[in-house]
Image (cartoon, rainbow, N blue to C red; front, side):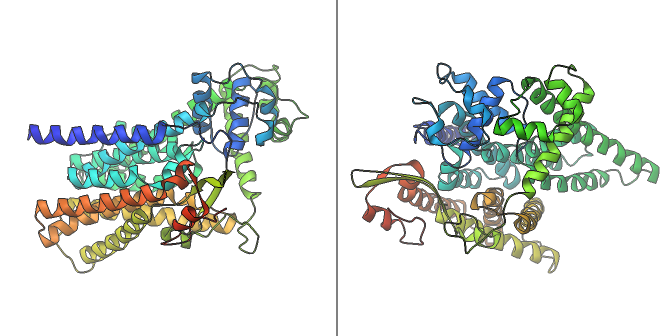
Length: 495
């Protein structure tokens, strides 16, 4: 057993080694901003300048992006302070010699952590090292993740906290014991952390009643009063953990932004227009940091995010060059996005958000299989699947369906993009792994045969990644080489 564990641990180390190579090598390329980097460069400069500011997303991810630039110090000798005035910076405004390594550092590191967390979570849920490792390989070679996470974007940070939140539930679930208030506090803290990166992580709160019911199932002999007392105590722990993280994050944001923004700058106009009198008194030096100042910052920040969200235009499929898409197309890997292209000497380098077609097909199959297994368990009372694996399939499937319901609702409010499916893709790959584990049990597939299937799928996914890699990693292609990438489906408009 020890030798086998060492073998799997070695495989995981190799996997993480390749993760570092894919996510850290040449992260300074392209040496130009693309997609949301144009916004986050300006946000980074506001943190570095210590200016008060309100942003479209919560602070955790934004502060980490800024921390990367500060830690590397790569731009310390450049005149980047004027960028803090802007809400959105163009490539022409960025000083010559600007290094993108710093702002891309933490998103890339969190992408690597996501692979480790995904392996740990799926291993816990399935009880299978081989299934967890194979599914983690799919995550490693997911082209859309590599394109998006190697840039200054928030999604890898969000996915890491999403995985940690689910992992916390799985850990307490497998104990088969009553859940303590400490565990609820940890869950609340992780859930808050995910939501304070991107607000759509709020769907994780649906796991709270699941945890409460799980806890009550172990104290059935308690009186009604005792059960109510337990529920309220645990809810208090959950809320306490969430509130503590929320307050700490916004307190840090407030401390880092204590200087007065210029009223006449695009960024300053937004901050002044949406700040309460208490917040204004703080950043103009009339009032010091206090509990009530932080509360007002939280309120002002939330109100601005809500207003900014409502100001985003809706999807317009008739609009030329529309990059948005409807959630119905996402599981099919449709409506890719060209973030950037650069041509030279008859070749063009692309930064294209395109999914690994093998992975997305496996994810969709995983969702279908999970629904089938759940129906078989609940309607036809099938007992061929391990009870614990069946429970986790239902749990992850419920999260997937809830997340999709939320993004469907959001799509009615504003334009959405393919990368908004990243959480769904992550959950669908988990469902694929768990469903395969269930199929092994149903059909009593021998370990050698199961491993051959897993290796074949992992190799197919890796081959698909390698074929599309030039589009993800900004490597030059001729037009003919580019058009060849449209063989399975049209993923890029070649120049």
